[in-house]
Each structure stands twice: as C-alpha cells, then as structure tokens.
Amino acid sequence: MKGNSDHIKLVKNKTNAQPGWKRAFRFLCKLVTVVVIVLLLKEGEQFFRINSITVEGSMEVSAAELAEVGGINKGRSIFLINEDTITGKIKEEFPSISSVQIKRTLPDQVLVKIDRREPVAYIVTADGYWLIDSGVVPYENIDEPDEDYLQITGISGELVVPGIALNCTLRREILQKFFSNWNKKDRFQIEKLDFSESYNLIAYTADNLEIWLGNAKNMQQKMELVELSLPYISEDLEGARIDVRSGKRLVVSSAAVLEKREVDP
Image 1: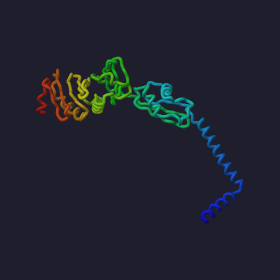
Image 2: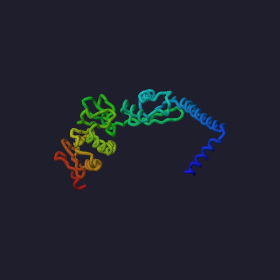
Image 3: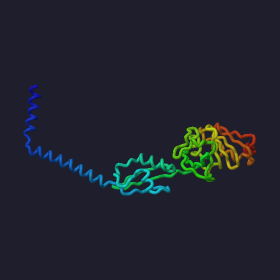
Image 4: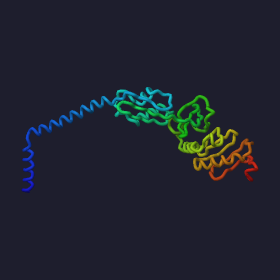
C-alpha cells in the first residue's frame, strides 16, 4: 500500500510540476487543430459539389431526365449520393434499362453508365405484345407483333410486370434455359412458343412442325437432338410432332415421315 501511495504522489507531483505555459500551449494546439479540421470540412464540402452529370450507353434518355429520376442534383455533395437508391429509381422508371453504374470523378463529376435490354421475343397478352430479354424480363409494350422476334403465347398478362422477371418460376426457368441454348442464326428456325402448360414448352418451326421440349432439364441436349434429327424428317410436316421431353430420345408422331437415310445414313 505504501508503495502505491508513493507512486501516485510522485506522478501527481510530476504533473503539477509542469509549467503553466506548457499546458496553455498544448491546449492552444488542440484548439487550432479542431478549427483547421472544421474549416477543411466546410471548404471541402463546398468544393466537392456535383457540377457535371453525363450519361454513357445506348438509350434515348437525356442526362437531365436520368438525373431527375435518380435524384442526382447539381450542387449536392458528391459523397452523399447513394448508388443503390439511384439505380433502383432509374430501373423502376425505365424498365428497358438492364443495368446502371454510377461513377464519381472528383471533384465534381458524375457519370451514369447504362445498358439497354436486348429483345429476344415478345409475349402475347390481352394488353398487347410485351418485349422480353433473354432473362425473361418484360420491359416494353408494342402495338404490333414484330416478326424479328419469337412469339410466345399461353402466358397470362397477370404474370407480366415491366422490369421484373416473369412472375412464374417454372415458366421463367424453362424460358431462360431455352434462350441460353438457342440462337436463331445457328439453330433450327422457330417462329412460335406456346406455354399454355407451365411444365411443357412447345415450339413451332416455320414449317409448322410441333416440338415438345418439356421442362428446363437437359434443354441443351434436347435442342441438339432436334437439330440433328430435322434433316432426316420429311418436308411433309402437316400435323407432325417431335417429342424430346425425356432429353434422351426423340419420338416422332405418326404424321411425320422419316426419310430412309435416317435408318441407313
């Protein structure tokens, strides 16, 4: 106890022994530091204010429109903008935009980079024709059907919400698998898809051949099977049907006639 008391007394005496001018000098240094930090923050906040907003990407929307929708206001601190909030607002207002990137360039520039959805088909509903991308996201209603894209029937308009992937998990997964494995330039020519049954995707070729693709499982294998078999099927395809739902074998309806070379190539 005596040792501790002596130590406390020694430290106390040492502190009290410091000259008053030193204590005053230290206090003044701390005060000056605080004042300098406050001034820097104030001046910096004035310096880093948004002055320029530019847009990069193929979209018929002006920088002013995007800035207004996203809440990117000139004069606002460049550090206070929230990328997630801006992205959400822009994509909600413009469903045809698939992605948004916000890039700050100090001291006062903001770049908005956007990507537009690429149409692959349109869904026929009572409300019109909805363009969709390969992710099966409806985003634009058109007045007339476009022959450049596949026609999809059998999907209720209640499942179609602009900017949101098709509101039917089973149909959405099947279509996503289909589009990831099909390219109209390389694969067999398909003009129409029917999805009246959510568990069975039916495709129709330009020659009115009916192809049962079934669910999303083994979609690539199914399409390869159809592609390899088509050259051996007679051109007289009235009412013909090909069934590859199993993914392992191809079944041809009696209405389709197999050419002799399929048996003996």
